[in-house]
Amino acid sequence: MSIDTSVVLEERFDDVLLLTMNRPERHNALNAALNHALGSAVQQAESNGINVIVITGAGEKAFCAGGDMLEMSGVEEASGDLPPPGQRLDAGTEVAKVPLPVIAAINGYCYGGGARLAVECDIRLATQKSTFRWPGAEYGLVVGASSLPRLVGAAKAKEWIFTARKIGVDEARAEGMINAIYDEGELIPTALEMAKTIAGNSASAVRESKRVIDLASLSEDARSSESKINRVLRGSDEQSNRFRAATKKVTGR
Image (cartoon, rainbow, N blue to C red; front, top):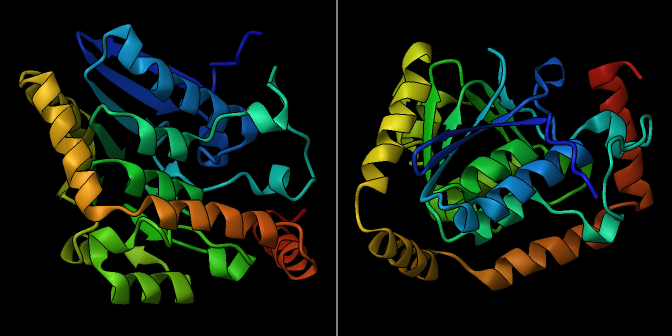
């Protein structure tokens, strides 16, 4: 089966891989094709001799606006040559699992599933126009509850997730979610330079450091619980009604 990789652009710089989510007309929203293709690229990187991954979004407005609301609400059907639903990859899950260091170069909106994807990365770089939002509670789902607290603490994570409010880049930096803020033209070059610096160190030491840090700061039980809870919530009357209303508000459809 061939996978439609046009939704993900891949550029290799020696042992550094730059992955660009390529749906700028939809603010790089994660439809099934993009989610699977990005997950596949991340999953295959290590076997292809890559030591560091950088992920960004195409265009000037968005890193990733979250899940594709039109597809998720059933207004549009999943497109592309995809495996059956149970066999499709999830980009955030693959980023969380990969032993390689992953840098998120956040060049704009970073909402919902896009914010979850960024939090699963190891390092997050942003620009002054970057904004963040976890709208799961508004839509009747749990988004980021298992991973955001390790960056900003439980109290701030609860505030951001419960209120679903938009977070500016300065607040995100002050709370520890963002490592650094750069001018727009400097974001990708800086991310690639950092990736090359990391790749120049001992690959095994970097990967083992990542593994130990994650063991110290992440709970696989929490991740598993978030997935299980969403399987129960997704499709309930309340969740369906909330998501349809949000989709109509955002897209007009």
